[in-house]
Length: 441
Image 1 (cartoon, rainbow, N blue to C red):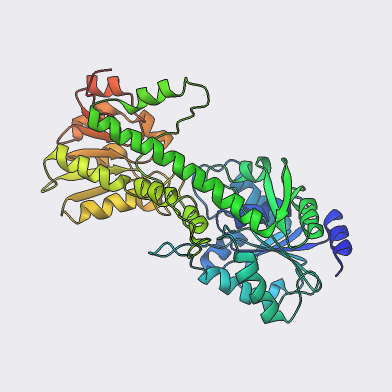
Image 2: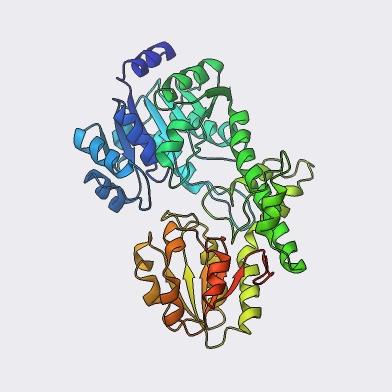
């Protein structure tokens, strides 16, 4: 199919779309395009997820405004359905790939899911189709990994028999639909004509700028923006550690720093989780592995942020004079407030460290079913409450009841959720991340 014909099918909504990977990125993307009049099929390897979606139910928990209703609407309308069968992609005009792209213990990209998805797609890829990789990948991946697989498996030639592009996602749990609609996007094309075609496509659902680029520029932009955030969080966390050592309050320091123009210090916290920020800096750094470029800042930032759970462990061990015989309640297991997303959760790492001491651990998270329940009931006979995730529910905990049932009234607030003066007035020992100033302001 010539690119002009594909553009016409996009304009009149007759193009058939397919989305591979129905997670936090792929499912909302599929639903939005379906809601705009496209016939969309989604492919996922998890049969239980496919079954749930085809019942019109969202497999994603947490506060996602409008998302559950959208899934129900597009499934009921018949414009979207899910499957595990790649054969259903054989007539797809446009295929979006949204699968995980983790790194291994050596911080090197692992592309098992991505390679598998591309190979499976290649076995049924329609001539003239447009393939778009939305997964975040190491710069150079489209040219060096994706393109060779498709051309080898299909025998087709890019920009002649099929078109290839990338449009890195910019979603965030809790804001899935909002970010897809309101955040700008960068589309990378094998040719400028392909990139412009992708602008036509994404402008249907994106209410912000859609900028064109080549493949590698789009790849660098996505990994660089998340690396930037990781570095900025690491700075805030390092200042928090300095404040602890000097007996200062990082939250007051941050407030005053931000009064200086251009000094937008981010929030320190109990750790950085999720699928993107712990991984994407390594994708950027890995792109120049062996080239002689001295990558120093990125690994340092990663070391600081990934080390925050261990730091909290050490603070707890010191304040509690050891973990032997202690019972500890962890508040929040998801990595992000008001979400069920527990990928690379700092709480998971802290729990592992405490488990090795033999202490008893109780976990509460209102958005993860196995950890849901009554907070006060879970706090019964606990020696410490450790607040790891800033779920909105935790700001309104009945602290008087909490103190009544705890064996030792000690709270570690790793996200600055609780009112310091109020907690201390109730008779708790309160330690906040970045603040060893006690009850003094």
